[in-house]
Length: 106
Length: 418
Image 1 (tube, each protein chain N blue to C red):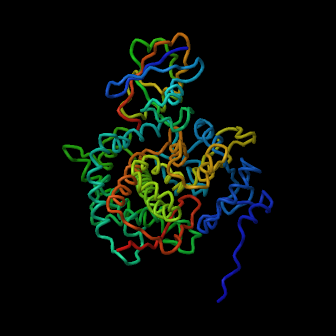
Image 2: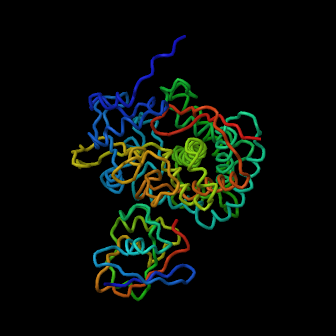
Image 3: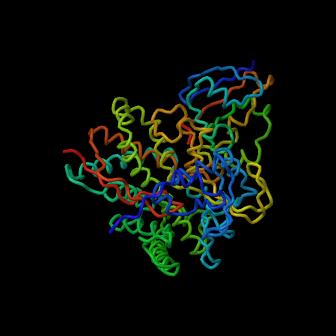
């Protein structure tokens, strides 16, 4: 099963299983990783599952949809490697994915 | 004089023909009986067409998931003020009030980005000390052992002060902001209305605009642009060339959005804890529960009952065919009581497992800009109430606003035990 590492703002790391087909957000919520609020439950509609994808992995992700790009445009501290983790599906290819969490979801 | 016999709204809502249900009737909110009608609609007609009402025909979306699906589909379901905007009553074209909540992309996005930094995490951190000291002062000034109106003395006062700070608005005139906000949302059918006509509303808007134009002119020429909302609008690329009408619209939006909503959650919270002493006992024993109590207050109050959209094309919601041009109300107040998504939704429970799962802020690109500021104010208010261990006793049920849009409490008589 793919493994995903969440790096909190203070540097704390958590590595969790992310079942293939599940979103990275779900993997965080199922494993009680702090720092992912996911208010809308994965509808790409609240931007409270914001993560910064580790540069080494950026090229392996499908580009954000138009809706995700719209939501990311309103995120505080949005950067080119910003993504909504509810829109990243775990795949075998993403085994080892590293994402960094913002200080807070806003 | 004999009081008219009380209507059993629970029975009425169960038995009346579906096509006669009109959830846009402001009276059902003033009388606090709206929940019966929505319970029926969620079960029997979750996407409901009301073909005849004083505001014309409209669709009601009442289930949580259908509301989210409608809201994220902003390409089909427009917010544009040119089509009627975000409230059900259409206004004559000459009274159109453009504001970014009532715009579609890309204009919406450009304007929203100008004001959004006012509620950045860094700004909220800066505000929190000020909010706490004001709340402390307000609570300490309240009478003990005497009945007073919590809405006026606390909810309006605190949100008015906050708004004045956000606009850098003359502090002594802050009640004007409350007045303009109330005028903007007044339903003209309200027996206690503040104004008599659209003409009068326009006249008050004119006074509001004149006041805000003066502040704009002061700030547009400032060498160092201030960090307040007016300076942001006056200097922002997407807003600095707005027409006066559009400036007025955005000011009204920020006043209503920053005022009415938090005000009514502050009032509602006192009522909810009064009615649910076991929940207050939990909070008193464990103040850390405020983290989940605050979103639960906001769910349970649902300060704005709905938002409207207008269909730009034929579409489908929850299996019903919507025609181009149809008006649609997404009833947050109903979705927040949807038993398929929220367990035991009619109960106020401060330690729910997923308290932030609610519709009160909306979802998608129009999601409430100030949501974290509203939460912060509520959180600090209750932290300071707990720190003083105030025993707030509600002495009469709340008086409620005649409005299907603003879910408001106009008066809440309380006494703080000495």
